[in-house]
Length: 153
Length: 357
Image (cartoon, rainbow over all chains, first blue to last red; front, side, top):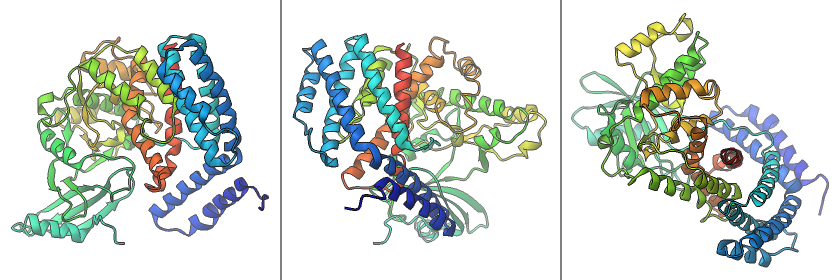
């Protein structure tokens, strides 16, 4: 396959074309807004294309460790136990995007269960560790947002 | 395939001919209004057979499967009919309802047009004291909404049994938003767990607007605001002649905790945010009008209720994203708003962590 330009570069070039070539030619206000939205979506997608597999693999491994730590602290928590088992069974060595996303979603559900158990079990060290993982997720999402800011409804 | 929804002048003309045949109305102007995340909107003028003109605003459901935020037109219609002239806050006079979509291809509400400007225009007018005056209007309107007698509201509007049960259910709703979607949102679960652990003092349940923001308050178009030296004259006019702002967009109205409205607005990043610019003044005025205590109404409780006030709309955003994954795209707006989900999640995390500290 052709690898250069990268997917990120191709998508960003599409953004440039939309904003410089298409948008100025539009007179319909609704169509203009749609193009501006598409530009934002493509910019988000470009960031994802560049990093998402690496980020998800990295985060899934960190969540795996965290879920094991919470499970050890609250061995009787059924939600954590079943989520940890689902994570253990998730595909982990397939780098195709669908497989990585599948494992990441399973990890996310396990992370959710572990976070709830840590908060309700009043386990400050594990709560703090979970918060660090959430910070990392937030920082990457901010990068994906590519400068987007909320404008309200 | 033709658009199943046709919010246009010919459809309105057929509607008038079918529902008011004796009044011989003619649609003389019809202007779709762009914007809005959920409903199709248009402004129209009708000239009746006796020569009088009537301006109306029409709100219709979007085509099935499109749009982001779903709400119930029947409930909104019943609500508007129940509220008009009976509530402490001014609402639009309901005029007509195509309850079956027979004429417009979708359920469509018509209300009386109100010649006003959104409150943010007033706040940004540049007049001396404009932001402070806009804040007073906003807070006073909130207090009036929240003082609406419950028995005014439609009988089919859900009545929670008590505050504690209501909050428990709302936190559980937040916790389970992603149960039926394919993705996961750990920050939601973290926030819900922290909300459960750190509940604020209760307050009486009241009518909640559900999308309470200055853009949904229309102030009578009375004068050139920017020319005013101060607001005293205008305040006298408002107080003396019933010039309360008209409150619109009630589609998410419900009975709930009034702090949901305040919390929802507190984080809205449309400048000037009337809460952020003076949170203590904002809250003091609200307490003064409602009699609620500082323990009930303070910066922490408002942050707490940002999370709960946003819960329903966030749930709709998350489900719209999931629909795209399942092959049912809701349009570019829904995709564009993926970022709004991330943005809300970040705030949820930050606020929940702060509340717990």
